[in-house]
Length: 285
Ligand SMILES: CC(C)(COP(=O)(O)OP(=O)(O)OC[C@H]1O[C@@H](n2cnc3c(N)ncnc32)[C@H](O)[C@@H]1OP(=O)(O)O)[C@@H](O)C(=O)NCCC(=O)NCCS
Image (cartoon, rainbow, N blue to C red; front, side, top):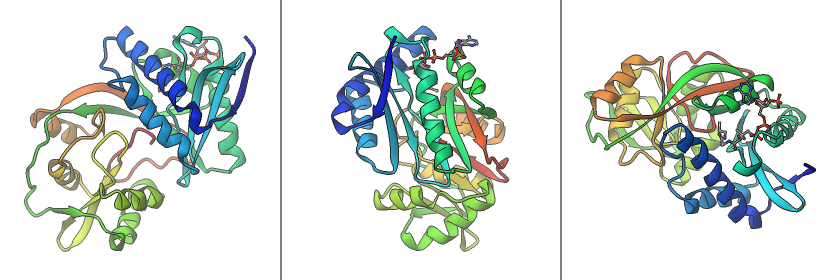
């Protein structure tokens, strides 16, 4: 098969979105897991947004002018994030995914990102094998969880909407946890009014850009994360993502009636600091 690659364009959203929905749906069905996207429109909507952003690099694979897959590189942080990568189910397992990955890895290296990250669907043998062969190391087992909102207050931990005045404190906390900040994502979330902070003892001890698939959070300890989670008015998309080794937090979520949707693995190339304190990753990293 002769495959060519080009940058994505806004007009590709319908076709790439349809492939994204079909690819995730097919693999989820094969393994009896819930799909990442409830319907085609949701996938098209997400890809329309990604294709419109100039801080996200996109690559589209074509076979005889027919789109057969796409991949994305999030360039809005010190660390680059990969995904979603999807290949038309009718042509999977014929090296298109490998080439789409190699394309964004080349881009990340050319742009001198100190690290590259992604979240892998842990039940998918093929993506695990592909990413491992391409140099990604598995760092952290994760659980994507969903369920009814909790609507509780954790004593002594007040949660409020984040403002731009909180950015410096939040970035400092993120740097303590991850070794780098995620300031641009936080600023975007503040603009979208999805970001929250938790205060304890008169200072900011945690923040979340959103409690959901595309949001990340950090805290000084689990009480901070619990406060942010318990205050959320929704768990956006297929839910939020908890490091499985944080058993105390995961157990608390399960005790609150939340359920595990699917296991995932955080995989990285380059800079990775074992997080010093507690965190929730986003689906991108
Ligand atoms: C994941 C995905 C993008 C991969 O694309 P693809 O075109 O099917 O994969 P490729 O053929 O390029 O690469 C698969 C590689 O894994 C290897 N592989 C596949 N199954 C394997 C297994 N069980 N054990 C070991 N290796 C395996 C293949 O041999 C190939 O390796 P190679 O490149 O060294 O020859 C595609 O399958 C897809 O769209 N899946 C659904 C959506 C999805 O899961 N996205 C990723 C979310 S993390």
